[in-house]
Length: 152
Image (tube, rainbow, N blue to C red):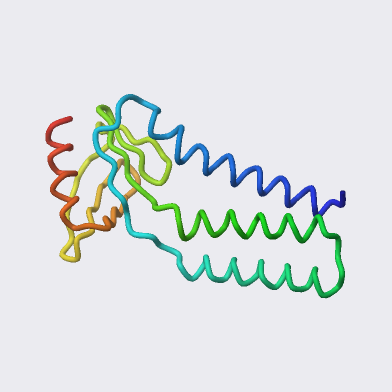
């Protein structure tokens, strides 16, 4: 096993751990889930660039008759990228004392101000940071509002 294969295995394990955490562990942390709202995906261009680079690496490895293990590891990495970029949907998860946004736990008492922009983006102002919540379905903003009013 070469250094390249070891690095690929480490990346695959890290992506699997992240996917497992995001899908199974995070919704169970910090109490019962009151509301989970799907968000709009961002960074489609980045996903296509990453997939294109992986395709180039797989092609080069096959054409130069590289190690079969490396080809398989690159294919597994491509499958993980496909899952993370196209199948998995980002979401905001509301709990009784806070919410998860971009896999970060935020307590409700950290919220200083909330605004709704004209294009349907919920802007949550924290102490030193501003969160832009772009929901997939505009009707979910009302559900978020009800949860925020109920929990605070």
